[in-house]
Image (cartoon, rainbow, N blue to C red):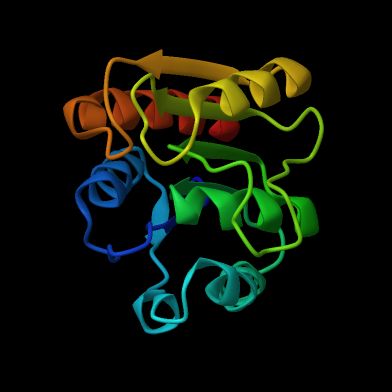
Length: 175
């Protein structure tokens, strides 16, 4: 086993969602164990009120992995937001972020990643929920790999690309 990939789903989604499922399949095919926390019970609270409990659940999942294991995080939308915050609080090898919001209305903390941490971002030019300009500015400031595609927030036409990029990130993290 190369390590653990912890994958966080978006709002109005679940652990078996298409994007998270595709990323998990790639990770498992490369010899990584996967974990997909279920946040659905928290999401009824709304974005601002669910953020801290989502983050706590993700941190608890990270903390449950035995010391010394390599951990890579991935998330989609709301899951990407908490993935970045968790990466700031725990030692993880890398992160893959899809359709990432840079802030949540009513939540005091903006999105963040540890400076210099290997990260891959995928975002849609036509994302109707998370403005692409904000993600471009973040990626430029942090020097993250960013792929912007002709798609909406759901990235429905680019699930396979997301999975391929995640696979490359895992190969790099496992080397």
